[in-house]
Image (cartoon, rainbow, N blue to C red):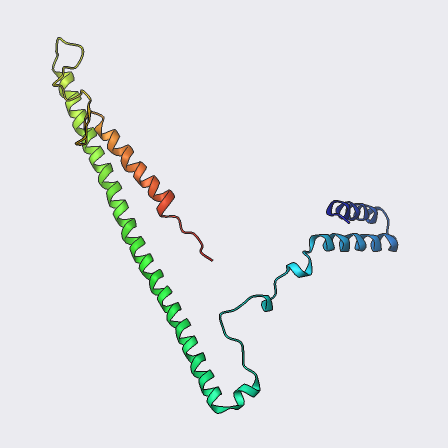
Length: 196
């Protein structure tokens, strides 16, 4: 029986039980529910059991093996070494997580400081551009277009030595770069992902 047929049978039986209070209808509804459960349940061989998983712990020895004192002592030393190894592995992983937490906090503080510095420098550039614009507006000039030496002119130079930007909108550029850096940090570095 397919899932769709079992669902249809369950729906029909449920509707019939609303309108009739017959024992046969209840039995049919139960049969439909059982068929639906059977269709939804995975096959028994698909459900893993504890015995299917291979654990790192060694198997328990037989009582015959433990009867010999030398073998038992060797077995107990081996088990002690095994559990000491596992314990040291857990302690190492705990120290790694503690270091990652500490370094994440340092990186977060550094990123916040860089973004705040970028916002501060953008504010300084805005203030300088406003002061220059006020000074330029207060002085009446004959020329309508800004001259080449005017601080309101944007100058962009890209060469093999580097990139030079002189502009009255430098504050906007710094602000955009700071916020883009912060966005990339939040998207690619900061997210915590479950490893288990």
